[in-house]
Image 1: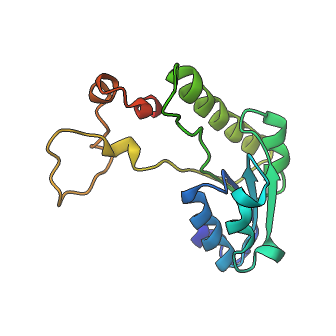
Image 2: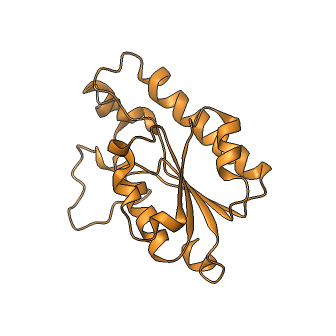
Image 3: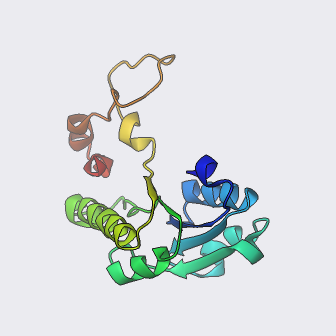
Length: 170
């Protein structure tokens, strides 16, 4: 999306903007001249100070408090943007008592809200971002020199048996 929108330097939405991956994406987009609407769960300085201090942030970054599970909040954040980078997802807790209820369902419902809001707003392109945990927890001997791709998913049974609840993400 970045390359194709380069000429227009339009406005894009980044969900979960305060997160690790999204923060780097926001930095990249700002450095390339985009205006970024970043959704966050907490507008406090402790959570967003690193974003507000980015080059071009004072002119081109708007942070919006929004919950992925609130469809209307997603519509408000996305409306008028050229594109959406959906990076947000629930953060796993080590004390998750019901990972499906606490992680999987909110992740799916939040993604659905973002996609439906983007569709309603006639957004031309949505990029859904995942992280390495989808392919990294694999006790099988995956060669170190072989690139991890769609053929190397984390082993669900291993994760379940080890109570590594991240397997609920895929």
